[in-house]
Length: 454
Image 1 (spheres, helix red, strand yellow):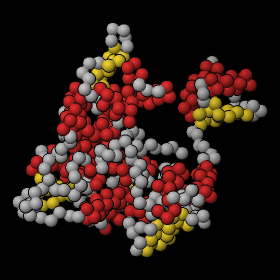
Image 2: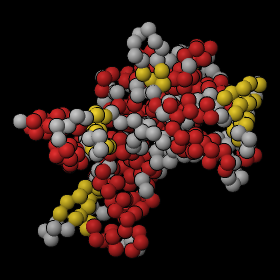
Image 3: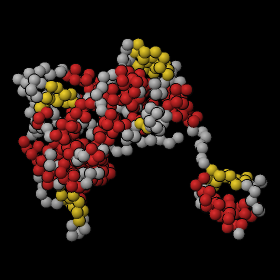
Image 4: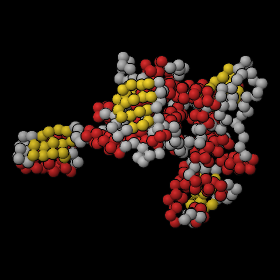
């Protein structure tokens, strides 16, 4: 069964892949430099602080001397990351030894941060603005509602229609790329293998996948990817729950804010005369979770040894996600009851979800009452899930061609040898002179046999 790797690289890899000119442009923003510094491995952060007030090139040997012998692999990873991000530029001196110099723009901005401290990107709303700010609880509920509504669009459009949403169809197409497929206009869109896997991820990983898609399609919408990355990371340094005047944003940033409001990253608020945007935790946690998308969240699932499953949740989204691999029997106002069955798992496997992904989901979303147990999910359940998956992988289908009625045994044996040489041999019956080869080797075999006839 082919497996889809829905998240091939983290966000910092994407930033590192930007052209040198765009990276240098990013570092003109002090908040970007702070976010990049946060995301670095610990040893890379140490090198930045060591070189922060040094203007001359430093040899690689000098940096390596401060690392213990068992830390050389971490040293290489740290240096590679700094060079990829153009925080350090590499050159060779007269002795052909590697030397490193810090990016001057990045260096100046981090120096200011260390000496003068950080400041907010813009001033929050004054107390005389004339409207009540939502509480942090209301803001969290809004963010969850918007995000779950977006995910319900992926699973079931009928469920999504029951919820209030204002996500534009054009933006949904951007976000659904790679997650949904549609054969023709008459059929509704269906989840791809990557889409099923996406739904089992934790919220931070899902969010960064969507953000990467949003940035990846920025050029089509007439936006500069560097400007978009810059604004997104700058947004993460605002205070959660504070209101900021939309008039302080450029026209492009206002368009971005409206898109982010659809996803629950910000909430828009209309005052008497002016409009404001209020960042939620989804936005302010962006730079914190750059390198760690596995933060622990409140779980809700209990799995018993008899394969019964109890999910303490009132969320429609949670119910729909559980349906991907389990049989949901009934749903109470705050409890979903179901079972993990062979049939429900086979359906999940056919849709591209793997046993390890299901087990990982159950472990990461375990209810607090069972989260501290070892194992969190009963071993007989996890073992059986893996066994049911292996049942489907016992037979592998390979397109092939069957050859028979060879003119002589000599030609048959020569054909078998040729099939082995070109890597297309699958099976032979020497008594009946039958040969089976891979479909991609058919043209080579046909050409070989034609030469033998001549």
